[in-house]
Length: 586
Image (cartoon, rainbow, N blue to C red):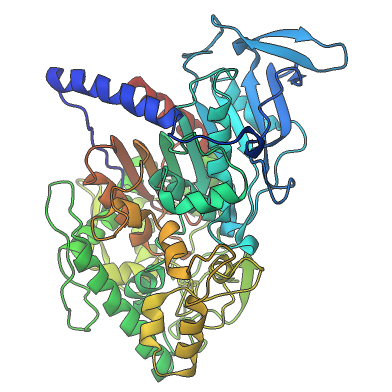
C-alpha cells in the first residue's frame, strides 16, 4: 500500500513554511550547550583525505565521533564525498588537503546543499563495523551528488540503546564539522532494513530526545549539536517492541495449531492486549476516522474499523501486485528484477492439513539468521516460485487450502474474505508465542534488552502481567526491574527504542523530540518476521502528528518477504529518487 500526504498548503502558508524551514534548519545544525574542549572529539583533519580516482571520491576512514568511545572497531566513521565539491592539494604522501569548492556541482546538488545519506545496516540489531577501506557501494550515491556517511555502531550485545546512541553521535560529529565539510548537514537521511530499518525509524523519531543525553555524554559525543535527521527510509522494521509480541499473536495466532492449554492462553491474552493497546492509541486513517478493534466471535477482537483498515491494506497490496504484473508471471524473474536481498523459500507447495506442528505452532526445525529465530522452512501456505500463466492460475494457487480470494477479471482486482484467511494462507508464521521476548530468552531482542553484557533479558511488561503468578512471571519481573550501567531501567530503554513513544499522544514522550520531516516505510507483506501492524501503526501516527512531519509514504509489497521491499525498481534507485523528491519541496 502506498499512501502519501502533503504538509504544505498554498501561498500564505508557503511564506510561513519558508520561515519555519529556516528555523528548523538552524535547530538541526546547532543545539544549545557548551563543552570543555578536552571533552570533545578531534575535528576532521582536512589534510588527511584519500582519493579514489576511478570513482572521483575523496574519503577518510577511522574518524572517532566521540571523545570517550568504547571500541574503535565500531565507534568510528568514514566519509565519502564527490570530488567536485572540493579543491584539492596533493601532500606528496598519497593524501590530500581539501577546501570546499563553492562552485562544485554534481547533478542536482552543489557543494553547499548536497545531502548526507547514512546506512543503518544492523540486521537483528547487530553491531556494525566501521569501514577500514574504500567502499565501492558509495559510487551510486556520490554519482548522484550525495555525501555518504558510513558510521560503525555497537550492537545488541552492548544492550540498547547503544546502537542508536552511536549513530546519533556520528550525526552530531558531522555537524560539528559543518564549517569545513561540503554539503548541508541539516539534510541527513538514514536508511536500513529489519533491525536496521528499526534503528533508522528510531533515529527518525527521537531527534534530540533527552533520554539519550546520558549515553551520549558517556562516549563524549558533541552535545552542542543536534542529532535530528531530515528523512528516514525503513524497510521491514522490527520495532514497536513494547507490543510486538501482542501484535504478532493478534495477527498470526490464528495460524497456530497444536498449542498446549497454557501456551494457547498466553497467545490469546496477548491478542486481547493488542486490541486494548490499539483502542488506547486513537489512531486515525487518512480521512480522519478513528481506528479501533471490537470483540469478535472468537473473542480475539478480529473486528472493528482498525481490522477493516488492515484488510484494505492487504487487498491494496494484492491489487497493486496485479496492476504491476504482466502474466505469465515468473517469481524468480521478479526477484532478479528487484535486485533485493530476499529471504525466500526454495519451493512452493500448500501447507499440509496438519498445519505446522510443534508445541508452539512452529515448523519442527528452527534456524537462526542475524540473531532471529525463524522456521527453517517458512510455514505459510503459499510459497511461490516458478511461473503462472494467467492471473486466474495465481489466484487459484492462493486459494489452494481454502477459498478466500475473489477475482474480477473485468477490473483486474481482487478482494479477500478476512485478515485471518490471509494470515493462515500467506503470511509466514515463523516465531513461537512470545515472538520477540522469547519465553526462554533466546531471541536477538532478548539480548538487546539485557544489561549490555551479551546476556539475555526480558522486556515485555504486558507479557510479564500475563505470566504473573507463575515461575516465568517472576523471571520476567526480575529481569525487567534491572538497570543498566548508567542506572536506566528496562522500561525506559524499551521506550527509547519505540518510535511510537515519540510519535503517538498515547505515550509520555509525544512531541518531546524533533522527528524527521520525511518518511518512507516499506515491507514485504508475506514476511513472518513481524506483524503488519508494526510498520502500519507508526505510519498512521505520522499521518496525524502535524507540524514537524511533512510527508510519509507507506507500502506493504505483495509477494515479498523480509527484504528491501519495492514494487518496482531496485531499493537503491528508489531511495535516491525519494530523497531527491523530498529535497525538491525544501
